[in-house]
Length: 453
Length: 129
Image (cartoon, rainbow over all chains, first blue to last red; front, side, top):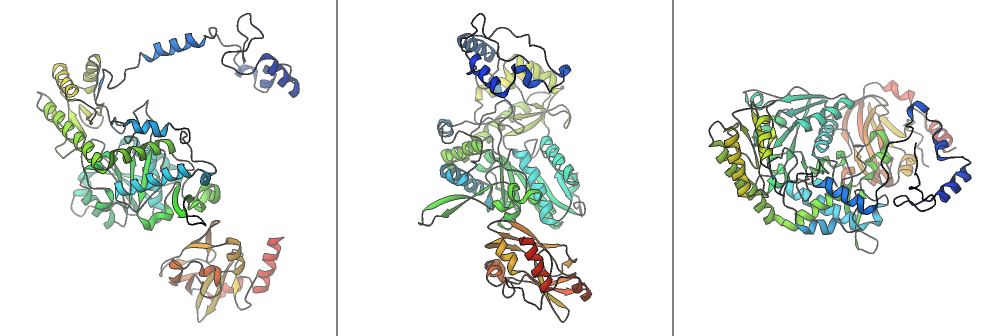
């Protein structure tokens, strides 16, 4: 353990990055009764300890900033010279600058629900607004203040369906995002719940039905491959079996598509990252979670309610807390004790900024640009669309050779292509086009695919 | 605390009044006092089969959510619909209008295994320490 080494030949001058001095440390060690800082680690066996790290001397702040800036230039940033067509659950959408301004305010700039929540009325109000907008977006009755991400929101929804129905089987449509399915399996394993994968082809057969004892059918719409599902048929299949229908939605798509509440979903979840948060090294994400009024008391997570105080003024409170872990222990509705508060705030500001009509325009731009791209790619010799069903902003292309080879060629030309899904669709590439992709970028992609063939 | 002598009790603070093979079930005055203001009661539907001392529902107050345990085995024939709109009846009248459900007993002999009013009074006195 090498603690803070004094800088070369300047034993008593303060370290540029560590606030306490040699004298401070001496004083603290004297109080504890330890001779050196290393004595504090005496309990750790010596073979587990590192005897000194071979590090270069500390840089000055100016040198350090230069070093970090040089490292940062090796990043390849989408939009900044790089055309990006990668989606598959994390999406680039334009972020109005008001989002950054509001969430950067010091009153809001934390990921956590306040520990003394009612004193933070502003934070609670933003959570309440997000819940209200989530309900409106999904056409559901109640929403919580947010989950970790779309995948854990789906897993919590499946557990909730098992609690409501008293059944122990979860059915996932095979077109649900594979990472989401993996998270559901992880959650289900601890509870001893079975997870079945059901296929569209299987469900559409005459007299087809879900396995006996199924608590819920989870449907992603648009699905992992970007295409729309026959949600009305899935609604019938789920409810005929006495199971709940869980919908996984893309919130941007709800500017155009029917919301989950309209096609009979009992629980609706979504990944909220696309609403005002960047695609930044895989996160941060935000789970949106809404359900029907009758299931309110089985809903996991934190819920903000609006009420009036003793003087009749509007106030916000965390409600239904008696079902949460800190009071109910192992019988709690879930073990979610926090929320993605800051990402949730970004989503609330985003939705408020773009509004109903703005969301529709964004969804239309995604639809038209992706269809332009799909049409041009499908017209290239050797390329075709893997599915003939309608899609929203992503589509799966069947390529003339393994996508892996094509993607490295594209990258050489400054294009991040789609996701290689050849494990699911032969030579399949999942391409995402949103409103931030320009026509020039799309044309560059098409030309590059034609050349790389 | 009121503990009517004609009822039988569980250590989980439920009571039962048996008449012609039908048991009316509720929570005790002591239980409602400990819970505080009741805001929601989740009760079983008619037809549900219950086992003595197994969970049959939940009661939620401003302080906590607690399980409800059935004093007797049998089939639920009615649950108190009035509690959906007025859960506070449980606080106001735990042995009257605040009853929870009616059960057709499968074995009246089970009632003998429940506490008498005196035993229950002693029990809560000990609980109080």
